[in-house]
Length: 354
Image (cartoon, rainbow, N blue to C red; front, side, top):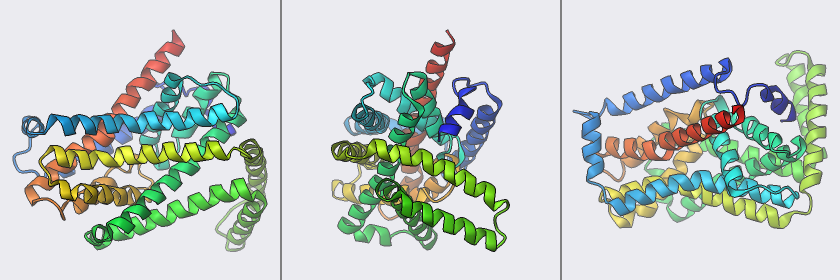
């Protein structure tokens, strides 16, 4: 990641850079197509129709949904701040939320969320945090992020097994693939911290196998790159050793972060007069949506998350309500969140240029 930080440093604070504008434009197109695909199924859809629908909502629950969306940003910031403090670097609450906003915004406009952590790390380095410390902090945050998704998904499956059964075949495949991916990622990071030598042997073996199958060109170059990466992460693991209390707090904040964004759909459901007895079912449904949407390298999982949400809501709502509920839930939990984070990143960029 340190190389990514250096590569990003020249333009991470400049929103006018060609690469960022290109991905932002692609993301806007995908978002527009996703919204159009969903809205086109709502007969008589218009902005006024959507506003009239929102006007019917219970303001208490709707405000709770907005607060839960904000919690997604704030709790990630708290997780980053917790790890920084454990490594003896002071970070203000406002600063940590700014880091989280950069991570969320650039993750939403780049495939596989590849731009979020380098952008976040750039801000941390700019504020005087060494690159290796920033890498270690974001490494542990990413690991706890994967664990939090898995834990909430497993708890949902245990408490509401019937909800998973309501999804269609395609959705179940996506959920299974997303779960497998999170298990692999969580295992990767755990091995990195607990047994980096074993992880290195696994990676070297995989590179050799790909080379023998002629699926990998220039195997030696990739082996050299692996050496450099493992050396960097070995230093990170050394920094994180012995910080069990910090790891526990980081996991807690990541659980709160994931629970916050998952709760948006449940709170919107209640705001629109949904039956309270199904509130936990909606929470479980959205947990499975989050798992499934993590298996496709599309910016913000746009399109995939919408498909899964529409499929999930079908079990609890009348057909005419499904589209409206999905649009409102997604607008709050994702589009509004990314917009706010983008505004924060723009403000940070202008402040830096001033």
